[in-house]
Amino acid sequence: MPSSTRIRLIEPADAATIAAHRVRDVEAFRPWEPAQPAAFLTPEGQEERIGTLLAGHRAGTVWPGVVLADDRVIGQITIGGILPQPHLRRGSVGYWITGVAQNQGHAGRAVGLALRVMTDELGLHRAEATTQLENLLSQRVLRRNGFTPYGVAHSAIHLDGAWRDTLLWERTLPEQGDVKDAPSSV
Image (cartoon, one colour):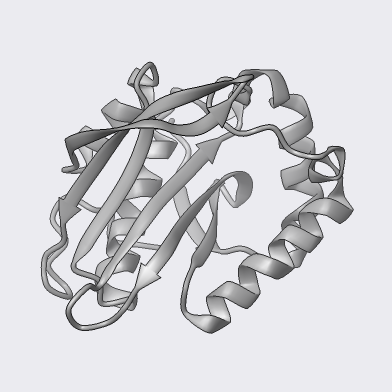
């Protein structure tokens, strides 16, 4: 029986679990994420990071969440760069799932739930995301959630010792309460 997927706002108490996932998965994430200082992999470093994310949440610029499978933290999903102004109303989705919970549909369901938060809670009109050109699994997650690619940002991010291009993704969101194909519980 597949495990359920939920998302919720991140909490300081999540720091140790997130640090443990990041330590275990450091090599697997190397091609997809920028290098981080050693403190990033510690519970203290994650607690500091979570504090910064929650300050951004209070300021209205980010919605930092965790992904849960059967009430266990298995990853993160963040809606960042939130621009709530009436003429913009957009945010950018980023996510990761720990290696032991990948390929079980959690990322796709978490993105669907984040789209519901963007629409119903944040009142946004546009969702954006980026992927590395080679990250076909993440691209599949976005496509299944109604995103389409719209361009390439050349030399946009320094990863694993080199500047890399990123594929830009977009999705127009429906008006509040009308997200199709997203799970009903957050």
